[in-house]
Length: 398
Image (tube, rainbow, N blue to C red):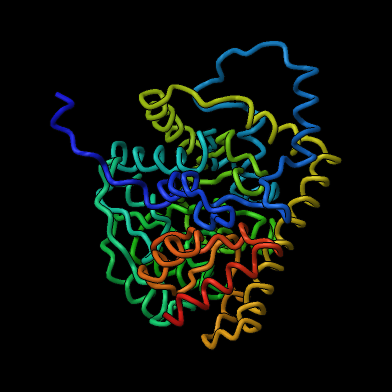
């Protein structure tokens, strides 16, 4: 039976990592996968995480299964971090949160819930968006359509086109919105634009699904949730898919969550039963260790302060790399204006490089970026910046 299979195409992002590992060049640089690197090029284990793991090692007494919805303390901490513990939807008990295997797991659970329990048929995603959004939503049985996002230069938000697109979406459809640090562009709406987006989505009777994978990576924990809070002010029903991979540097632990906001406490609890049923048919229950780390840190004021300080240091380094990237390109004599990179937020930049230029960066200079031209700014360092910018100059000239 298996002989009839043809090789599946490689993943557009993770497949590049496999190619990178096989590249013998001593100067190779991986700017494709969305993983934070420190100034030495390493993905760090945060000190607050090490401290939490030590506490867990000393106090943990068993390795039993978690419940279907995950660790209770974790589920309580997540929405408080997302929108603030004093937010009215929390005071009214209108939210429920389930732990998931990463942000991707949260998206799949949400998509299954929408498709199987609410009979939603279409999910609208920005053009462009994270490469795996389409895979996840289609695998859950949703028809995937796109709405306008970037302008023709590929460096700014085309807000009129965005609103025009949203106004064409049929009532009852779901729409995926990036809360902050839009992947792959790094281009986020302003607060006023978020308010207008929320009004259109409400008037069109659409169901928002908010992908919030980068809280604290852009401007700050509270600042990055501003768009989400604008949506909550206008929408009684909303889903939030969040992750601690980036802001806790817990990539391999797969720590995510799905938070559902409903009209009432009763509606939220009823929806929870359906979400749990969806999870049970998928992976039964989530892993424990990563969520226990997050819950331990967020329950302790000292560890929370340490985490916020370490997160701020990551955020500052990314912003410094944006500045250095733009300045080094100028120093290399690149005529194209890359100053837009310094105005973008988060780990990624939509560089505007063509697929041919991306291929030449890989084949001639051993620099790996996604075919769309998305660059992981968090993978840049002061030591590799010269090689990156010289290579970009070369492919632009060619």
